[in-house]
Length: 571
Image (cartoon, rainbow, N blue to C red; front, side, top):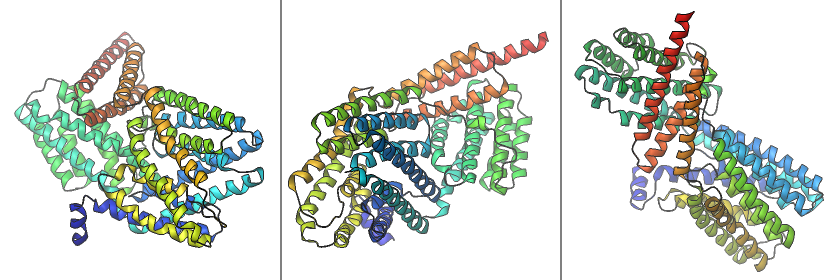
């Protein structure tokens, strides 16, 4: 392995990504051949599916493949119903697609993880069926072809991916959480020993916990056990943040007893010791805590550790995990803006298609529906469109070259399919190089989109070039939309988060809350706070605003506890 790794690294290639690219290329080639052998009209769609769903871990691969299949099924059915209902009339089809895609992008921005991916895919899958259907008689075969090619691609990605993906790769997050928990325990132990709050290294703790939180959606994929594991990890990091924040804001005295027990717990956790021994050390530390708020927060951390350790040992939590603890932030503002942006851009393209009746505009509408949905959840979609455009231009140019120089001399669809196989493996190189990685996936996907094998074949310069231009104009159109209509970037997402936090803090401060409502609020508050930390890390900003929101949250909670104590005393 080192004989290959070092030369690749010197040339700027990442060996792990290169190996992943070769594995994906193999699965794409197999799916392409199988789809062609089954007589499917668009075998290249199977290869596109492989490139789209392949992932480095088994759980993520399995669940992403499942959501792609489900999203394709829903989108295909809607597209077929729309075309039949509209009787193949351009304006009703285009406007119906616009409303459907806008709805899907709204829901996709509102929810999280692979459910969001499946929802967005349902949007542009309808576009592929409705816009590529040439006649009423071809609609049903096209819909079936779309479904079958996706299923072939998903199955090949699963089979090949399962053979080459190690299950232990999915345990890296658990190991990371354990390491960071050990560091937190040791930092707090040093703080109590020397009474120096700089030893807490609070900014570093916030950053590391946010890094763990960012991986939870991918970690909790593939099985019910994985979802349960992700919920328990979230409970651990939320309770750990609560406990560390109490320590950061409260005045503390030196306490060697707490320090000793925390160091013991950290040592036992590092050894992966018995659950009972780790919990005993943590409970001994809790008994030595004098401040009531800190002890309460630390006890919740112990409870979270108990459930996580029980899951480690038996695959089940020590007690049922409350669903309310998994409440997440929903970006209502961003979802509404993305939906409006999609309706405006697709509506304008639809009007152009209806007025001109140029079939190339249908390809522009198809590309725009993908660009405006799939990339709407990224940090900076307009910036992303630049690399997408470059990758798509390269893919479109290569497709024209093969259309003109190779396919006219081939006499069967089998030979056409075989001519695509080398490109699959060549794509592994840009996919793994640090300079070309960002646009490499767009290169191979657009190349395949434009490469439908058909016999008899004749190269038509105008058709090939005009369709390729329509496809690559989609990211430019989307980029203009992202820049002009509700510009989306990290600063805007941070602003939306701070508005959501401020409104909820204000509402929470003015309304009495039960214990269950406080738990629900805290889970969502910490999820928003972790997102603010992640944005600060990406922009290299300070955590000043994060810490001020944490302090405000602590003040609101103290105010609520005092009001509840007064109510109890009156009773």
